[in-house]
Image 1: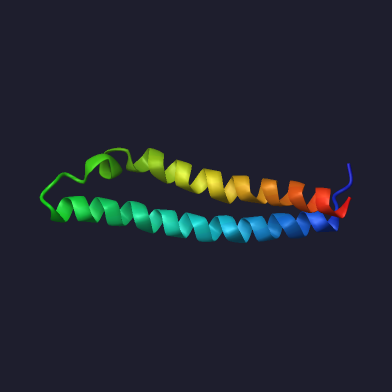
Image 2 (image 1 turned 90 degrees about the horizontal axis):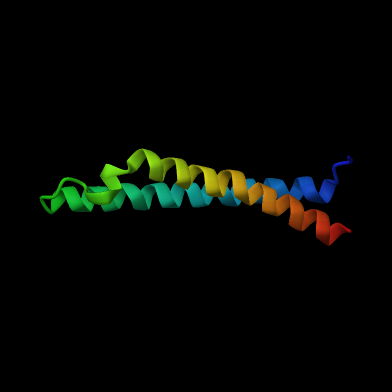
Length: 78
């Protein structure tokens, strides 16, 4: 199985986009938890399932986007 240069470039772009998306979603999760705690709550669903949400937020963009980027780059290059 040969690896195409266009696929590798697509995967690199996908990894960068996944990293950005991960940072944004991680900040939104922390903001939701902080907002709930400041309102007098216990952190809500964001705090209760923080480990699960963190794993999903990391896994989907950082692992999924490079795969999609590689496949897209490979298909566009032919």
